[in-house]
Length: 221
Image (cartoon, rainbow, N blue to C red; front, side, top):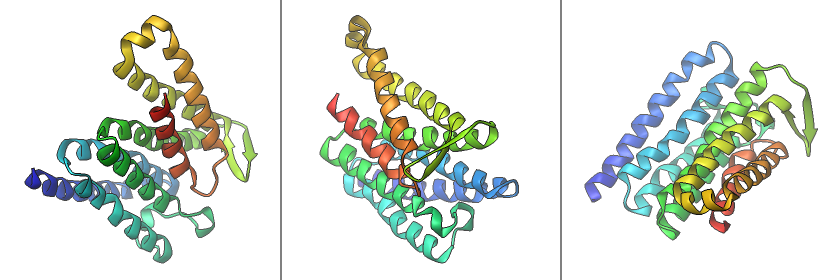
């Protein structure tokens, strides 16, 4: 067991290193795309965690180190491929903190790693692809609470979130949700709430507000 956990840390660092190096390809096109490539692909780290880690302390080790690494990188601009302007906030640090919280709750408190996977995927793919399609698709922009978003981005966030949460609810509560019809209602309501939370989150705060609010909703339903 201990061997698998140590191996998980090594595989985690290898995977994260490959993702950051691979992001250099997108940097030639636009720095924002390289950042979002990292944002999306790092979400897949949770699958590594689920496979290798059986101990919450080992699972916590990777996000803890990246809270520190990402903060130093933000201050010193060490990993240029994933950094934004200083005024855009510490989104990369929030991302690592969110992973740490999800790890503690799902691997430690609830002992249900799958529970942390869903908020992680919503953050990685929902929020990440929202930014990508928000740039690729021309649509009107809106601003709430200092956060500037696009209708195309928010629509993408809603669709991706609906698919992820809907799939999870069917997997866990398939008989109850099919028989009562609650699946559609609960999924859409959660997706709407999470999309609104992302819409009002500025300066990278969505990297922590989106996954944590998703986690809370999943625990409460």
